[in-house]
Image (cartoon, rainbow, N blue to C red):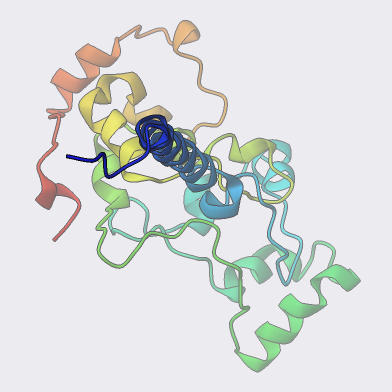
Length: 217
């Protein structure tokens, strides 16, 4: 029987298969890089806000506690965004004529909230409760990064599911005493109590929750 295909067909088919494999691998690599890039995650991106609020100045410089502005962080799933009257508690006297604070004064006069640009946002199908994490000894910096050093807040972590699961697998790595949860300067090496993450996990009854309904409800 006469040969239907030319002898070159063998190496062409092998080369084609290899090319497809290479393209698939490269494509997967490119997708992974893009998926974890600031283009998708929004990490390190400083978003323009209606007022240039500096956490560095307020937290590190003035020593303000996170809970002064984020009032519901200990009792609610949402940490809370401070109303204008909270800002004006200080700024009726401090820098009361600053041009940078004109949007704050106008919002206060008209009783209209400022439209802040959201920095940390999760999909609607993800449930996250600030209060339970705070109660279990997870510090603000574990998720939000060194906020006290930020002139403009940026997103420090990816907030991807893989990142959340790493913490849920080993929660002891991110635990601190409850009294230090909101501290921007807490150093475990200088903590007189010297409780390890494993000890804190036991004290606070922290479990490694990896079931789907922990976050997807």
